[in-house]
Length: 208
Ligand code: 3PG
Image (cartoon, rainbow, N blue to C red; front, top):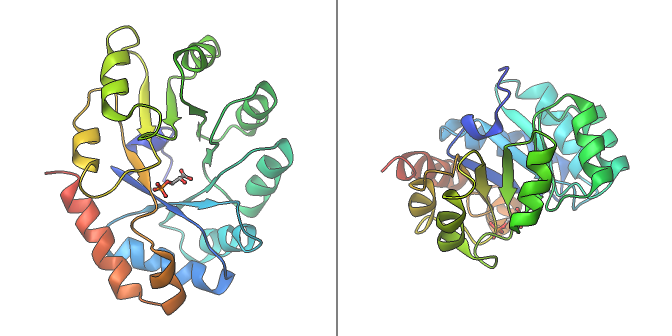
């Protein structure tokens, strides 16, 4: 895959916390079996970098990315592990420079119009809207589509199967992110069939 736009890979990006690197490959395969070919592994656990390495090596059809990037060092670590796209919850000049320097697609986080304008000044038009529901949700995105029609978002934070289709119907939303496809208890229990079902529902439901 050579997508330069993360927003075009899948209508839903599963946002995953991996606590045990041994779960990474079966988890990625379970999502792929359900029709979801992208995964954002958040750097919130010790297992995250080894998980990215394993998915990159063993599930080549899966576009694996690194999320919750909050520092320059994490960006370097994520690239070294094999991440193919990068996601941050917010945007600082240091973080933006680090992500841009990798040459990889990246989704910097924003929640205000001024942050959006700061990214536009850098030529960035695709971003994560986080925390989506808490920061104004669909009403907020609808309101800024008028003055800022050139921007497309991946809203994340509080997205679920009920509201995902409503977000995806907005003209300035390219995809949504969420953790609902990979519940922690299902991952710990190794319920890969259950995760495949959630992925299949998300892949189908998002197009309805
Ligand atoms: C993220 O890291 O983007 C969010 O924590 C995911 O939010 P959710 O758990 O509400 O889907």
